[in-house]
Structures are given as C-alpha cells and as structure tokens.
Amino acid sequence: MKIGCHVSIAGGIDNSIIRAEKLGCNTMQIFSKNAATWREKILDEEEVKRFKRNLKNSSIDINSVFVHTSYLINLASPSDELYHKSINSFIEEMKRADILLSKPYLIVHPGAHMGAGEEYGIQRIIKALNYILKKSADLDLKTMILLENTAGSGTHLAYTFEQLKRMVEGVKDRKRIGICFDTCHAYAAGYNLSNKEGLEQTLGEIDRHLGLEGLKVIHINDSKYPLGSRKDRHMHIGKGYIGLNGFKELVNNKYLKDLPFILETPKFGERDDWENIDLVKSLVLNE
Ligand SMILES: [Zn+2]
Ligand SMILES: [Zn+2]
Image (cartoon, rainbow, N blue to C red; front, side, top):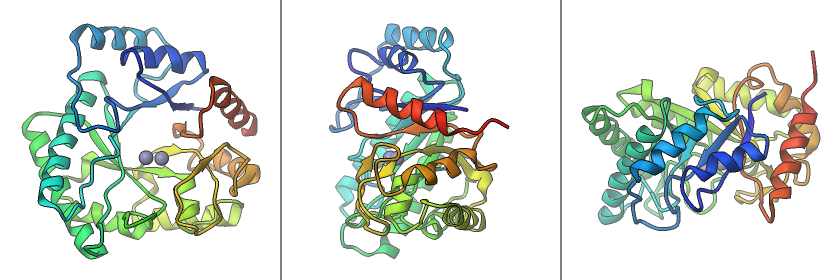
C-alpha cells in the first residue's frame, strides 16, 4: 500500500524526504513554506537539487508527493484585498510545486465565505480557480490542484461533495482539478465512515457527484469529535470516533486501496507517526 504522512520541512525542504523515509513512508505531504505566514519562500537552487536527489534515492514514490497550501489562503474571501492576496499566493505555491516535483499536486481547502453566504463563496472560488488555471497555463505550470473536502467548521465550504461538484463544474480547464478526500473532515461533516455501509454510501456520493476517478489522495485521520460535529480536530487512527473498524474498511476498499494514504494525525513526537503508520499497515488484509 502507499502510506505516508505530512512531514516537516524544518531545516530545508530536502530534509523532509529524510524524515519521511525514516518513518517508513512511500508517499508524503509537505508545506512548501511556513504555512502560518504570507511570506513566500524563494527556493534555493541547491536546496531543490538536494530535494530531488534525496527523493530519487529514497523509497518514496516520486509521483506520490503532495504539497499542501498555506492555511491563510482563502479563495472565497469577500475582502478584495485578501482574495487577491490569496490568488497570488496560490500561484506562488503552484510555481514551487512545479519546481520541486515531476508530477506536482497542490492540495487546498477551497475557502470560507466569512459570512457573505455559501452561494457567494462558491462563485468566488470558481472565479479564482478559473483565473489561477488560466494564469498557470500561460506560465506553463503542470501542477494539478486537489480540492479537499472540509469539516465545515465556521464558514468553510466544501463540507459536502455536492459543493465540491459545483466548484469543479464551474471550472473550464477540468483536467488539472482533482479531489483530496479527508476522512476526519468527512466524518465531522456528517459522512459516517465508521462502518462499511457508511463508507459505501459516502463513496457512492463521491462517485455520483465527482466520479471516483477524480480522487487522487486520501488524508487518513480519525476524528476527535462525533459524527456531524463540524469540528476539524484530527485524532490518531482508532483513537477517535471513526474507529479501527472504519479504517479497516477504508484501506481494504477496492476503490481506495491503491491510492496514496497520508496521515495528518497529531504529533507530539516521532513515535506518534510510527505508531499510526504501523497500525494502518496492519489493517491491510492480504488477499
Ligand atoms: Zn488540508
Ligand atoms: Zn486533510
């Protein structure tokens, strides 16, 4: 199976590969800058070379490395200033993903309407995505954008697959848009992934609205809060409300089992990632 986790880029982006490999990952996710600031990171040429060399020499699948955007980006923002700042920052994120990876993927939470209303927010996101895709095509960037489903906390959109479908349908250049499926977010938004029936129902809904072939990666996280709580708090696998049985169904599901699974579970020490990775691997049934 393809299993990995979100790893830190502290001390240089090239260090992320070493961290991931130590943990036994064959897929991974990074931020390409400090995710809590607007400041853009200029990638140092030597750092990029080391990153690529480390990746090539590692056990990580070079086509299964994912970049997650900064949390400050809000493509639904009703403030023109923040909206344009978000769009510009997103394009910088795409450029970095393109420099780092031969098959670049960029994961984003579509946006929060901040009280302006869901319909307004969805239209705002569609407009931003169309602009970004046009601009990035002009720049010859090959990065694929992956829209992530959210827990729907606050005014965050994309907490239903129907909303995600609306966003995707609004986009003109659809071949560079895909989906990142986060299990904690889906559960908190009301999709019951704790048992087989619930998982099948959820996948049916994804298929109906988006097509399962649009799924490119799964964020495998348990949920600290109950079904439909709309709270985005990740938990260790099996220690939250989804529970081990739900994850056993997930990792063995015929539509999902070959996709990359990325953990974004709490980290107090390296041990936490090890334990979660080993646990997920142990859930896979051998045919
Ligand atoms: Zn995310
Ligand atoms: Zn996630």
